[in-house]
Image 1 (cartoon, rainbow, N blue to C red):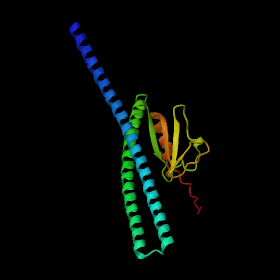
Image 2: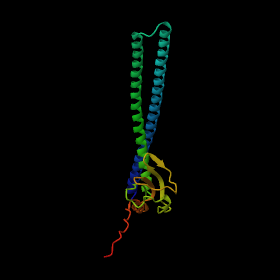
Image 3: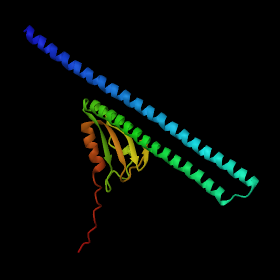
Image 4: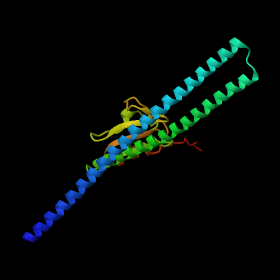
Length: 215
């Protein structure tokens, strides 16, 4: 009896230790990711400052050169060629800096997407443990929900409209908001009620009855 108890205790301690280890790893990865994002933002800021410096330098060179040449004698072809070379060199340097800036921006977006993905997974797990979820519904063309207001959506105490996305815009869930085709509605609440509400948004509009002629 005592041996079985010790085995169970050892197993529970092992599971707890594993969970604690995974939690520490997850936190450390999250902190490391934030540190990387801050470092990349600093690099991007430095590149932007360098682009401004190059632009100012070439501007000052051109003003000084053109001003000096104009006061002494008219600009010759050699002078214009020198000006063109200075502009071309500055343009090449700025293009290289912008290319590096684009690469850094891509890295920042990837790291932020990883962070958002983890947050969404954690939120989905929290909701699943409570028999709830998040539903993304696109209103199809021909749906009976088109033309209806948000206030007309069947409601319950557990269902909440998080937002409505229309094209590039994120719309606040106002009661007088009227649904349009291809609107994306984000709902949060109990999973069973979400399933019923999905039908309300996707059901097709009934065609009006056609009048028949009497013979």
